[in-house]
Image 1 (cartoon, rainbow, N blue to C red):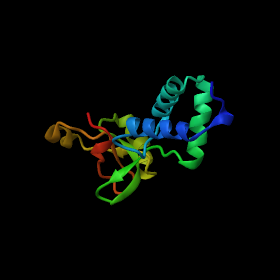
Image 2: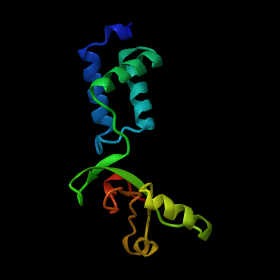
Image 3: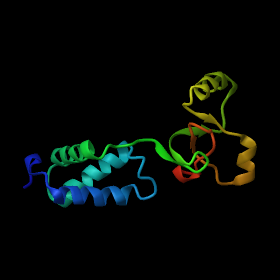
Length: 138
């Protein structure tokens, strides 16, 4: 059985393969769910405990920093933070969400756009406020 002290190139190779597999559409967003899935698969591949797999994964990220909630915005031509687009709000929520929108934490979507498109982006660029469909649609 491997130990954290035996971290090797084969562990790195396994982690690189897993990251490519799980982040294939957006290598800039390794959220917690994906992080834990990689841990689980790594433990299975290397036949180590979950704690050992997590330790390997954390070592990997000291050399390859993890990014969360980032994606490429074709409008800005760069990697940006993405934020949720909220399409329906009650009048009670509107002022609170408007304040969050001013801080760049959410984008309030246009209900008219929903009727036109049928494919509605779930996230938008925090910089230009345009939808980033590659991050998810519903």
